[in-house]
Length: 196
Image 1 (cartoon, rainbow, N blue to C red):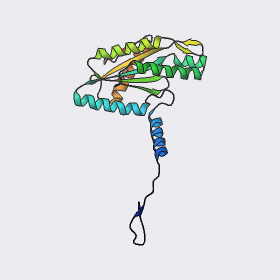
Image 2: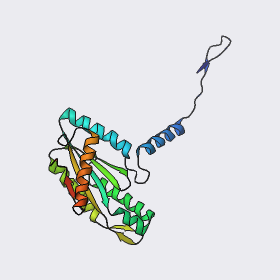
Image 3: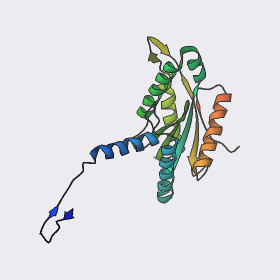
């Protein structure tokens, strides 16, 4: 708004439509927080959501479960069928993971063939095991890609707040340790972290 000069009453009002700029800003923010392939939250958004889940759990004395997933033998899919098929498989895995959780939970792609699931407000540790089994079952179903069926499996490590740790780094490390125990024991299963 600019007042008129020369003592005249009134003003000149000009408007600029910033709809396009705001849309572009939202798009940039979305791309910074989501995996470009699967559209799942990326590591940065995962850390933010995990921080919020832990803060909420501390405040209301709730439990949070972190499931750390690694797709079994994914490298062989890329090596034998190519990266386009591998990318299609990762997208489908992301879709199936989202169908296994509640709206209040989070699935994130941390990178490569590694995913994480945040389960908020679980009542007992076994609840996370039921979700892990649901995920394992969903991922054993073949994935149709270019007139062929790709079979994958998943190894899942589970850590629990507050039992296994009270921060993201510790909980990720515990879940990762449990996942590697699954890998070394034959893959395609889930395991809780154990201090023993």
